Amino acid sequence: MKIGRNDPCPCGSGKKYKKCCLGKEDNPEYLDPQNIPRLYKEMRKKAQFKECIYPDKSCCSEKIIKAHSIQNNKILARISDNGKVYMPAAKPELHFQLQKEYGRKEASVFTGFCGFHDKTVFQPIEDNDFNGSKEQIFLYIYRAFALEFHRKQEVVNMEQIMFSNKPSIVNIPGLMKDGKTGFAMSVNDYLEEKAIFDNALLNSQYDVLTSFVWTFDGFSNFAATGGEAPSLDFESNKIQDLLNPNIPVRHIYISVFPENNKTYAIIAWLKQFDNVFSSIGKKLNEISESEKRNYINNTLPMITENIAIKPSSWDALPEHSKEEFSMIFFGLPDFMEMEGKKFDRFQKPTYDLFSL
Image (cartoon, rainbow, N blue to C red):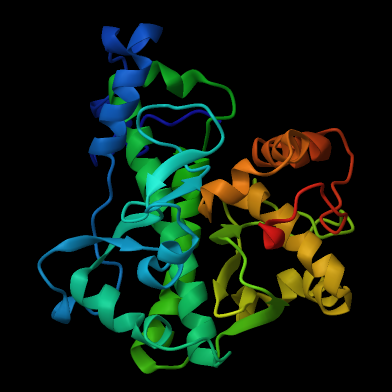
C-alpha cells in the first residue's frame, strides 16, 4: 500500500505528503552509488537521536551522554584486550567485516539518557553484585529495552533523511503500509511498552516482568543485550502478526553478562503480554542446562548486534565456528523460515560464547 496524498510526509516535516515531497525530484547525489559510503556516514550523524527517555524530565542534567548499554568498568574493562573489544555492530564507515574493533569507551554506547539519570537509575546494578532481585532484573531488561527503542528511533530518522533526498523510494513495493514504514510502526509499538516501563520506574513497581534468570558457571568473555518480536514460537506456531499495523507487536528482551565467576542470562517480557508468549515460556521452563546454553548461543546473533566479545578469544575460534556465527548473524534463520524450514535454537552450534 502506497502513501496517501493526505498522509503525513515520510520525510518527517509534519506536512501532508501532497504539500511536501509528492512530485519532488530525487537529489542527484543519492543516485550515484559512489557516494553511498559518504552519504551513509553523514546520515548516521544527522539521524542521531539525543534525548533522555526517563519519564520525569524535571531532574535531567543538561547534557545527554553516551550511555553504556553494557557496563563499562564492570564488564567491558574485564573482557577487553588493551581497552578494545569486538562487536558486530555497524560503524559509520561501512566496514563490512563481521567483527569491528571498538574502544571500550565507545562500545555499546547510545545517547538515550542524560548524565543524571544514567547514573542514578542504574546505580543498583552498577554498584552492587547481581543478586537476582526484581529491581535488578527490571533494570537490566529496562536498559535492553532503552537501547532497542533508541536504535529504532535513529533508523526512523535515517529513513526520513533518505526519503527527503530520494522521495522516489516510496514506490518500492512493500516499503510502506498505511503511510508508514515498518520501522516507524515499530516505534509506536515500543512507545506502548515504554509507558509500562515508565510507570514501573516512577512508582518503583518492578514486578512487571515475566523473567527467566539462568546462571552459568565461569566468567565468559562476552556480554550482550538485545530484543526481538518473534512471530512464531519454537514449534513454528504463529503467535503474533508482524504485518498487521492495527495490532501492536510485543517484544522479548535479553541481557547476558559475566560477573565474578558466573555468567548470567536474563530473558524477559512484560507480564501483561504473557498470553502472547505463553508457549515460549512453557518451553523455556522445560529445557535442560545444555539447551539453555544453546539457546543463548543461537539467539544472540539472530536478534542483536550489541554483543561485545574479547578480541583474543574470538580470534582463537576455528574459522568454521566464526562462519557459523556469521551465517546466523546475517540472516540464515530468516531465510530458513521463508522456505518453510525450522531453525532450531536449541541445537548445539560449533561455537560456544560461554567458553570464550
